[in-house]
Image (cartoon, rainbow, N blue to C red; front, side):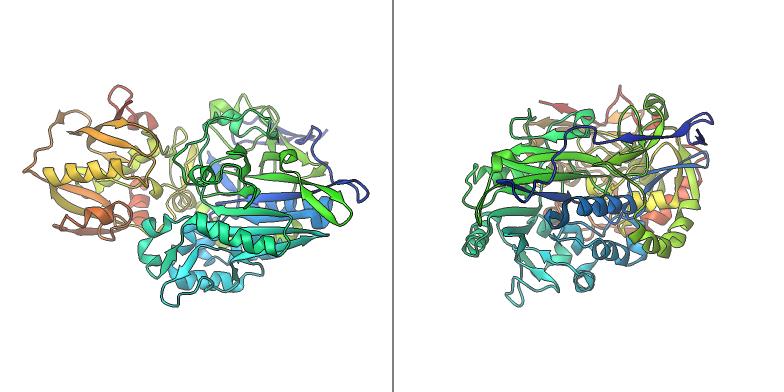
Length: 592
């Protein structure tokens, strides 16, 4: 047997010719035409965020990759061959913003992917508006599929359908079954992206669902799918959350956050089958494969690293099909990559010490089909690969461990970034919004591509001055802001926060802390605060409320954050991550 060397970890790490059967269990099969039970399969993707190419880990100039739509495309081809017209693929939005490849192609690489692989429909994500309305019009006009969105309205024209290839609802005919789809996008877009959607109204969900459901049922739909760019987080340990399996209504499920948008929405219907039946969701970048308030729900983490399948069953009597919701089966999360680790059956990378326990890398099958690069996407990949690779080859520095931003607690990446901005600006304090961080930096080399993937937005580093009283008032507002379920990364501060639940918390105490000295923030002293232009001067999110009472003082714009950070990274030979988390002196202390 031939052996191939993988030098990402050490020279003896081996990929063999063994092929692993990823779906080595009794997964659902297509029922025969004569069977009284009829089934279809829904593939749900979400929050791909422009990540067409695999995520590359560069360790000592050796490469391993995971994710990648060229592999996801092969799954789609195989599943379509397996299920024929009973296979339906739906996407929950946030398709463009995030990936360097999407940025340099002005979104073309993503639109081409969805067109070539013939998606059945998508809803619109909040980040679809990031490049203003002209970009979204350009994208939707080039789509060979429909964007399904029922709850947006052009204020100027008073029209709910105002984008090319946008429809309010959709009916897909699969043999004699009519599948209705209602698409919705998060109403928080008006808060988080207010300048780019100033002419758009986002309509409340419940009334829209009831209205559109009634219309679909009048047209004879047999089942209704909510295709949502709003989501929920469920408290599942990562090793369980990402473990491939089959789930049904009797599977044991963990608690979900009751204040998240999707949970609140489903609570208003409480398993009332009059309006809809199953949910394909996104937005929160969370893996969900369970029943919530009586409804089957699927979603996954971002950048196309995983997807889910949902199998719907119908009782067939003559020409009448009755949906059997209790028989619904969810399969997932299904990993997307070229090779998987034999001990974990996953492909996402971790720390080197973890990887040593994961076993060898192998080719693999899913539903008895070998997963490989999709031939239909080879030319599309080649068209943009050279431009993309230039960024991958530009090494800025390296890190001794994985650096990632964790939304609900202090983390290495956010501490590193805020400390860097503090040094660059000479500020007393730095405050960033959690949405600034979009990816992680894996152990090893950090390239220009990694920088762009982590920070895809066109941000500018800015600073202002506030007196101590104003600053403490601002931090108290930030920490109690109902639309933010996570802490805002900071430098120069120690904060004590009382947490009541996911949406309710209050700042109890705040002090100046530079890593050595802790002291009070004096009301009458002036302090320099660094942030990004999204926050000040743009006043997005919670900063809109702050700018209602705070008049900007001594504003300075330092320029593009990626240019500043690339220069800063080049000045560091290697990032030692232990320098950015002090367990004995945390920046945030939570009291329950």
